Image (cartoon, rainbow, N blue to C red; front, side):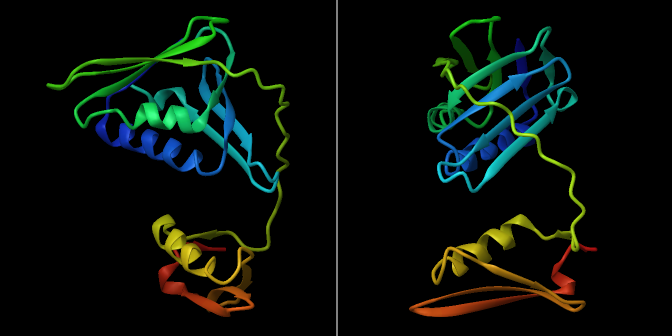
Length: 192
């Protein structure tokens, strides 16, 4: 298996994915398949399921002949990715049934770096995620949503969502107080 990611914007996106995943998952299985990269994991409370699929075309180079699943520690993988310098590109290599994945950063006027990440054996079966038809499909800018959630969690880690024709309300209340965020239709990208 060999994956290369050179596009600066995509390298940033890839790094951000694992920056955020380390806050949710301790360990995860990444499946390298001939047509795509797939990852699924569940947080420690078993309340949140994360699923990630990146098509092979998204990478600058993607060579995977046979399916291989590699268990990794998300925080360690992010710490490695965090060593990437601005003008460098990412190369991931893994020989079939090898216990270590090679992660290398090259390019630019900086020192080339190579890391070995040990495989973690995880006896976890993939969960089947059924297709569900929801009463409301909402698309909001993730940065705005993240900021609102950080504010709501001040009062409770449970958020109530109310959808009307005019707006979406997010509510959190606890012993120390409450907060209501009203997202107007103009702030919503899509609402169906």
